[in-house]
Length: 513
Image 1 (tube, helix red, strand yellow):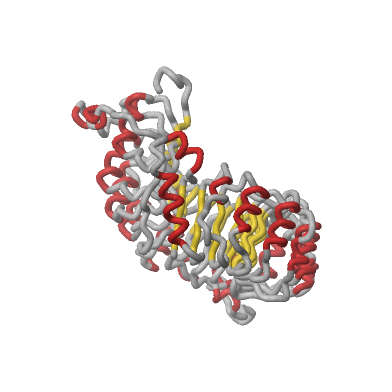
Image 2 (image 1 turned 60 degrees about the vertical axis):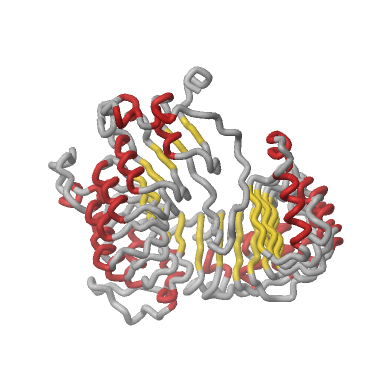
């Protein structure tokens, strides 16, 4: 690699399960000029009741294991001046369950250059291990730590004084701590953070631009301590914050383009009689976001209750991605007017909404930029008429328990009207084995196919599904005669021809009976 790619700066080995941490060490020694490395693997939810039977990857050649420990034996570890480890600025290890606290200690050799790290879903790591990494790599300003054991100990490290801080004469006392310089911090699902520690962390982040505290202990007491005014991305979904703390944040961050508040039930409470510590009264959720922000990405539920189309114009005129879920029911006039309200809409996800043919057909006809349409558990009198219109921009279609009436004829019409790369169907019990041929011939570029409770679609195996040459992911759940499907995949796995396996077999197969 050193001689083949002399100018290589970014190395990506995503979803390569056989690329171990020792290989990373070898890579750094052989190619010291690389500055970005991505070793992430799939982080989609696979519960413990499922097992990975086989995974295709490139043939792995023998490597010199002595080289992997060379840096330790030669005293290179921890030497910040060593040029071998002075270039890596971005490291992505998302989903790697083989990464341990000891590996984080070894990553500290990148302390002179590392600015960004993503260890989301690295479940073997402990709070102490993450804290040690933060203590050693003080130059980091962007961290994705979601669904790890990040907790109080790590927060103490982020909020402690840095003796080597070059901002020692800064007029703001918070500038002497690492948390002050954070630009991106994602802590989604980090449940080991106490309310007091959360308050301490939030009060020290002044220039953060991207902040995700989804499914954490965040409450009004902590969010009221946030004084930053640089936010562009804020996700506080599934927390107990109310308008008492959120309204000042919205008003102060006029550049906010992404706001996610799904599952925040307390936003629904009437806030007219509630006063903050400063004595100011705050309006309702919809009033605050429409008077301050021009959002591009929204995920909302509770308290998002527009009645008139004018309630969302012009504040939603730049929205490209919208998710509306549990906690609100958008009236039909709002749903029908979405192409007018959001003329640049590219992705729409509706959960537990009441929809109709009129709404869906208008979306497909009028939202010319719509690439993603997801309907999950929606109610209403939806019929095949909804999809009997051209939608040339649509690439991802997910219909989860909303279209039980779909037949092979409906599938054929869909293939003629849109060019999909991802399809999810749930509860379509009228489909049969012929549906496979319709899907594979109608969408040859399909990369992801998920079928759940779809009648007898796998009665005679999955031959036609494998005709989709671009398939990367297949999920078959609760379909008929899985015993015929599994041997078919097994035959593809055991061809003894790696090239043929790579051609036939999707990189990820999930089967649930």
